[in-house]
Length: 284
Image (cartoon, rainbow, N blue to C red; front, top):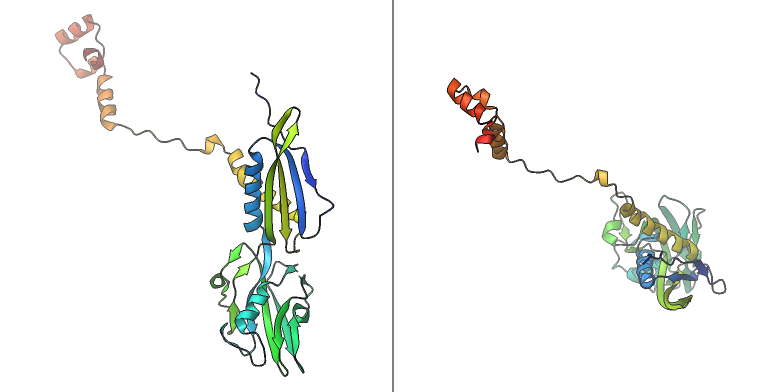
């Protein structure tokens, strides 16, 4: 029986009606049975864990030494403020870390939001309405917010920098720009068969990356890793060295010795020659 080629997808179908900067729905079909789950699961894991992004990695609040402190005339304690800063969404148009400044002095009760952060040409804040703190009358809040790029989830301990000034509080950072991924596999028809896979992927991001770019980047990461297996060069794989049996080699060398090298008597040599014995191996 002639082996049939794999059924390959015709392309990626984008649901244009629901496509936004932070949501996308994509369909890949038709796929051989089982490939929908295989590809969907691999892409989902990469999307949620391996795409680069930006996050707040540390904060320095004027007059505060550690995260368990409270700030006079500020409703939230430092721990709450840090939790609020973790939700800051932005695009960092620079490969270098950035420090943003925020200073607010309230003459009356008021709220501090991301809109109060001093602008930087390399930083585009996406959720400027993010609540950071609440000030009572006479409250004063001054801080420096440290931004950086990374991948995945990084503990506060890893964000410590000996070059940071005293008073900088490192934070846990979630760099991944993808907030949620769902996929499902449905049946689709090809000819008379209805058991082919149709893979539907839904992607949500924080707005710092378009869902189309996120899917493309995840596929590229997967391709780069699989390429290692495709490009295996058999010549580069060392063959295991055979162990040499020295005793066997010594005996084999003796057995291959010509009898004329043994300096035998003339009578013995004639007898061996008459018997057509030329080497010691012929005697064994």
